[in-house]
Amino acid sequence: MDPRDVIVAGGAGFLGSHLVDRLIEAGHRIRVLDNFSTGSPDNIAHLRGHRRFTLTVHDVIRPLLLDADGIFNFACPASPEHYQRDPVHTTLSSALGVHHMLEEARRCGARLFQSSTSEVYGDPEVHPQVESYRGHVNMLGPRSCYDEGKRCAETMCFAYHRQYGTPVRIARIFNTYGPRMQPGDGRVVSNFIVQALRGDDITIYGEGQQTRSFCYVDDLVDGILRLMDSDVEGPLNLGNPRESTILELAELVLRLTRSRSKLVHKPLPADDPKRRCPDISRAKRLLHWEPRVPLEDGLKETVAYFRQRLGLGAVSVAV
Ligand code: NAD
Ligand code: UDP
View (spheres, protein in one colour):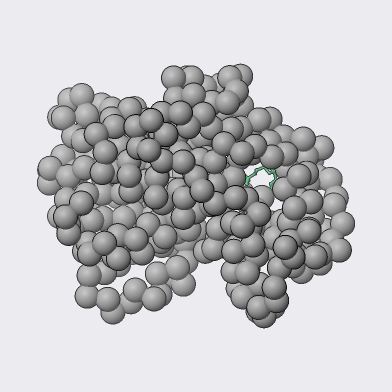
């Protein structure tokens, strides 16, 4: 991309702030929109005063006039604990938020990137998940505010594309982790690392035999930038195809942190997907992209970040 005016909605969050750094490095002028519901000013504090960076505190469920060449939409809580706290607002953040961003993209002639999710597949009956799979979502369950909101957002993107020719790029992002996750975020990687570092019990929901496939944030951001620059119009899975059980993840975190925390079992949340792993053949073929950072290496970086966040000092992690 040539240097451009780029909007990053949700840019004070975990993924958005990493993307903002890459876009600033590439010479773009960035305007972040964020309501700070789950994001943190710390994630973008280093950019305060930068001549190509501006921040607008704004909730995307309300319209806003924008002037942009490109819009990245990340504005939605991502952790089940957060998105279930105010399910009405979560549904509106996805459905109305993307509508407002698309309306501005249409008006300015901008390209829009939508951060969709593996959750559009629900508790999948097809494994690994391919983009052509239409999913198995409980539209009334506690996760539906997120899942159906994101499905509706994809529909809205395609409606704008069909009706107005608005260029859209949609990534179905699978579980991603790394520095700048919030300690109280509630997602499994941050929970396990914080619990292990503090010597608290590690909370395994259910038997821990459910699987997820964890992608390091730098790999994901590479994929997002490639997708935004590409001609790929259909939704694309972006994630790491190495699948682990939640128990395996807990054991790896214990080893890397040299923690003596005990594993304790808690009830499995309703509709918790049993298996999740992306089929990334399309991303490999169309973007020449695949993740490079092994889980152990990415977790070491994330452990180092949480040590610092928790004020525990820089102790080396186990190799
Ligand atoms: P995050 O919670 O750290 O980031 C979300 C950001 O959006 C936060 O800064 C939050 O304050 C902001 N936000 C939320 N609702 C908003 C609203 N209505 N108006 C304005 N700002 C709002 O989560 P994340 O992991 O960085 O996720 C970013 C996006 O990527 C989300 O849309 C999420 O659904 C998607 N995603 C993330 C993952 C992942 O594993 N991290 C996986 C799939 C999809
Ligand atoms: N999980 C867990 N302990 C925790 C947090 C999460 O066992 O402290 C499990 C959760 O039930 C799910 C998986 O880890 O099966 C991933 O949860 P997360 O909230 O990170 O993301 P999800 O993929 O469910 O959206």
